[in-house]
Length: 329
Length: 293
Image (tube, rainbow over all chains, first blue to last red; front, side, top):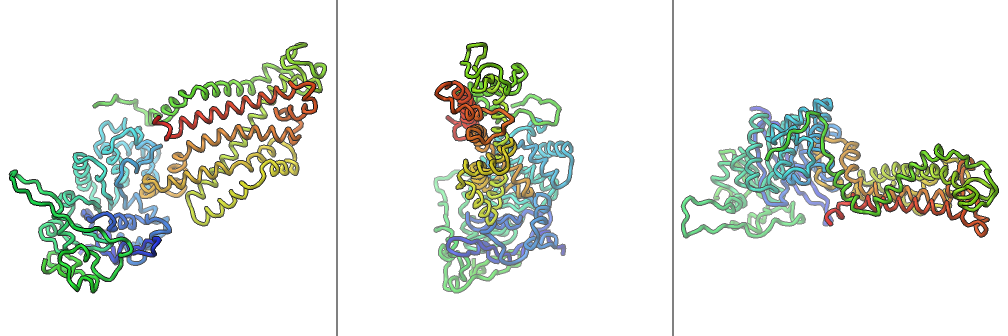
């Protein structure tokens, strides 16, 4: 079997808060193959974005740190890599697009300059070559009249266009991994679909693996081959998307899927009630306890759930769920 | 929607933020008038000596000849020197010291503030303690000591003014850096592999500039005042004329010939006021919080 492009082993990230040290990512392992799309799903505060920042070596200084585990990128451990080495990798081998296209572009530089800057830093292109390449990239993300738009400042563009510009910037150096941290949360629904289409097409063209962080189950079903459901800093469930949506083995996954409304082909007077997952994500203080952290919200709660942290239960279809009751579900 | 095709050059067009700021500046009538006056004063300082070539050190007439009489527009001082020539030549010195001292405060202040605000931690602690040290120094006394010890040459006076007034710029720069470094586009730049230098000077600093520009404009005015204060006390290069020096050397005759003190005083007042008004206009133009009004 081929070595995966990215292999994360037992990653633990600690965040220092006023109440002490909390493991915001607790013993997380997963792998990502070249060209694959892996999706992280979960509510806010479950550690999805933290995982992304850790992969980039961008954990907030003095607050967050990698307390254990390995992030093996093509065999190299990024958890141990020097700052200079990480800087080379960032934007070149692994790049990232952010949630807020409105605020994630530098307001005082034109978008052409910002894309050209990345190219010059990583590929040593000349000013002119970088500019030409930037225009080509803007064209690739389907911005109309790229030559004219390259000289525009971010405030002259719409949200969707800015997110395209961000994608162009992220893809400038043909990265092997693209991390998309809720790339469409701040955008209109119609624009969301365009951005996902674009990401899908670009993946086909460039062969980049995508880590898609999202709340949007619909986007997961459409974009990703495999998914990881995160809950309170721990993996709840991992496996192929269609298998998980078909038969979730973790009560949290089940809850998330039931939350999504289904469009009915025939309008009838009876409507299914939308199910919600009761309660909220536990506070950071609760993280790291030796029990199932979902227990307080779970309808399948038993003694065992409070007695110890659930072991991952593996299934034949490459699905695995961290729940004591996974078999029964 | 189609956009008109832009020219084939590879340079970005349309400096929109600049045009927008200029529109805001233009709305401030006082600032525009002050800017015009300031341009006039600058031209006078540069071309005045050629257009009115009287030597400011030469005794051209009897002392205390009042303005307008006996052929001298602004009269003569206690040694019989032409006051108009002195004002014109003094303008250059006053403006030059004002500008170069302000430039020095900006250089020191921005460097210290940027490093402190960007790196935080121990770097910030050390740099801000140094800043606080300079803040609590009695400014006039300290610069007097410097000038008295190392001689009253123009570079030394400039240095003495600059070294005591950079703290305000440093604090403003640091606070802007602290705010901007947490913004998403800085993280985004970091995520695309930008080095610390690039983050500091290409990403954060340009966004932190507006309040720094306003502060440094005001700095020019206060440096001119400072220089006037020093030369009034006699701490000035005796080989050049400056406005403060004219006031200082004529101060004994203030009751007999008030105009010898008043005229250079008005020159200082008008110039500093003009600079302050321009600074105020820049504040209107560059402060995003005032834009929406």
